[in-house]
Image 1 (cartoon, rainbow, N blue to C red):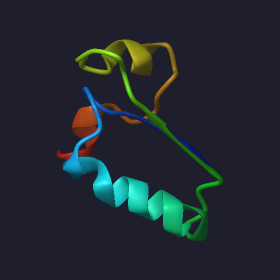
Image 2: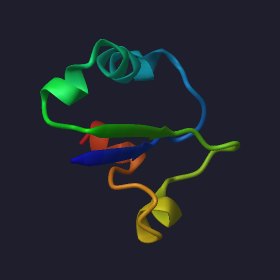
Image 3: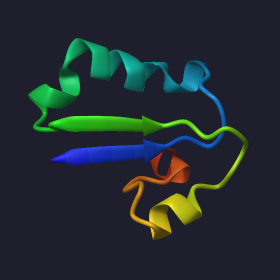
Image 4: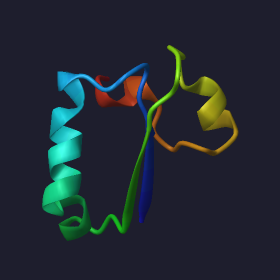
Length: 64
């Protein structure tokens, strides 16, 4: 399974668990072969990335 996550703006402490999980191999242990973190150059809501299938998790999906 491949996961692409688009964050809403820039990396911040809220994203630390994702970065640690990727670095420690926790995603691979859970069956995720590839984890892509999409960091935009400016603030956006992620909808366009989702529509274009560049992301399969919009930013709000982490918090709902």
